[in-house]
Amino acid sequence: MTALTEAPVAVEVDGLTLSGPSGPLVTGVALDVKAGECLGLVGESGSGKTLTVRAIAGLLPRGISRDAGRVDTADARVGMVFQDPMRSLNPTFTIRRTMREPLVQHHALSRRAADSRALELLNDVGITDARRVADSYPHQLSGGLRQRVLIAAALACDPRVLLCDEPTTALDVTTQATILDLLQRLREERELAMLFVSHDLAVISQVSDRVAVMYAGQIVEAGPTSEILRAPRHAYTAGLLRSSPSAGDPDEPLFAIGGTAPQRIGDLTGCRFASRCPWAATECTAGPVEFTRLGERQSVRCVRPADVAASLSLPAESGGWPRVTEDLDGDS
Ligand SMILES: Nc1ncnc2c1ncn2[C@@H]1O[C@H](COP(=O)(O)OP(=O)(O)OP(=O)(O)O)[C@@H](O)[C@H]1O
Image 1: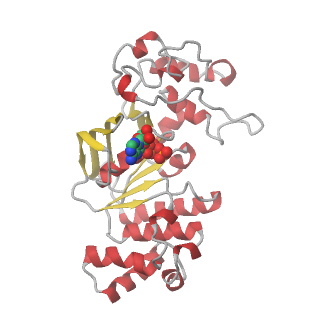
Image 2: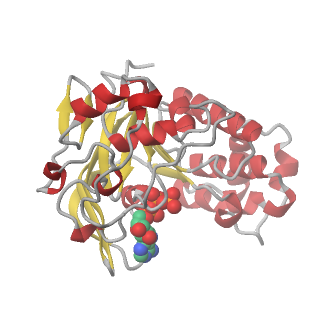
Image 3: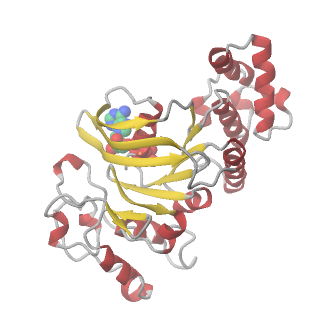
């Protein structure tokens, strides 16, 4: 396998700005993914992860427009795996029929050749009784099998890029682990550039080489997974880490970041997290906050990353997550 540092960039997004009827939803998103690499995109519900992925796939929902930015997939074929296989698979088609269509369309295969390729693909995703599965309807399969089928269908166009949007969220923990293993194996074998979306930092940390953290339509922190987990520099990332169920004492109540994300990001000038941030000061909302490099590989959109870092290095009870004392913009 090619070393990641030398691998070609397969997906590049720059300045991506998307709007809906009520205003901007995603602003200035920039990211890249190399062949064979997995970039994790993490953030809470509504932060703009799915819209970003859909923009890359060229599948923006009706009513959402791309106002600015560049999406370059280097003419590579793009496959997509969604969260809910039941909604992505046509319930009135057998799996064989669902898989046949892209194979006939993309590869101009005959029906017979497409059916035999479908069986190969089902085998490739670890389905041992591929014939039975091919003859089944989606409702006759378990959630894990349906997700494998969806992955097989995504591979039908022989993609170089695989966009995975919460592919394991609907699955139980054991099945989740097997699907994550499968995606890892396929990425390595096929040198896929993978963009993996999840609200769950624990899942992201298992599969991703690098992580980009989204909040209120922006990337607020990005860097190698190990750095982000060990030394978050944005308060939102630190809060996400603390609120991960695996992070704390199982006898303690789960930590939750106070407040809610802003509904209308177009109205905000400074840091969009300021109203929920224990480290926020007046400078945070005075003007736009740039996405700034920290060291070689980590970047953050925060005017006080050193204060966040210093505070996080203190014991949790004294400094891990101070109380929010100031209501900066009344948005919380
Ligand atoms: N079709 C649409 N029309 C109007 N607004 C939309 C549409 N799809 C998404 N949005 C809005 O865009 C914002 C970002 O949504 P998006 O689905 O990308 O977030 P997400 O981070 O993927 O969240 P989730 O994890 O819940 O899917 C949200 O405020 C959402 O309400």
